[in-house]
Length: 322
Image (cartoon, rainbow, N blue to C red; front, side):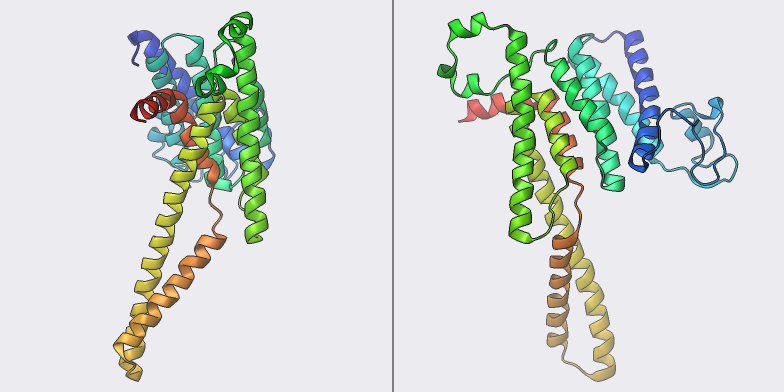
């Protein structure tokens, strides 16, 4: 639902988002390396040249410098520009959807944390505790001021009577669902990782994903946590299958080219060479599926943000369709 948007407030919210996006870039780069996000000042990662304030303006500085360091002329990753713009647009979207309310603040905080974790996981395959654990605490704290919808009372309304619910403060009920959401999210991911490890003998996901899911559950509550896990699993599976297909096609073309060259020189049958090329390509694709470290936090974070904003509408549509 789009709220009435005041242009001046919208511009201010977007500007705040850009500034927080600039800080988020610092977190994405420094936290996985165990560095402080406060000191020292921002510097070029290539030559170490300190970046002056007038070259540290969100978006503008990257465009003015044309994506290069002013000192050594080495390229500056487009990730800096992308994160700043995404954070600004995220803050603006939260304001447009929820208005000037505490729900906007909650959405902005969750989005800030998830964006940072998504890009960190995609870049380093790490999910820093310095973001997930404070995020877990913030999610629980926000449940006391912004209501979290519960799953149990909607699926099993007889579980808690109306009289009993009227006697329970909504804050206590919201807090309970936040804690339950964190427990459900963490337990599901931990259980899935344990089963995968026992079945395949390879670690399927790290404990960082478990803590990320606990943070998400604290913000979203139980039912949206379940939706997030389902949507992230679906998105991750589609990505994995697409990766396997892409590897198979690429390796098959390369093997067929090699087979064609060998056929010309040795006179090997065309049908046998093509069959061998397909089999070799399939073996490569299976190895890619087994050993590729998928940054599952990317899918968890993305689906969590969508669930926070649109999850209730999706669930209402689903229940009506049944």
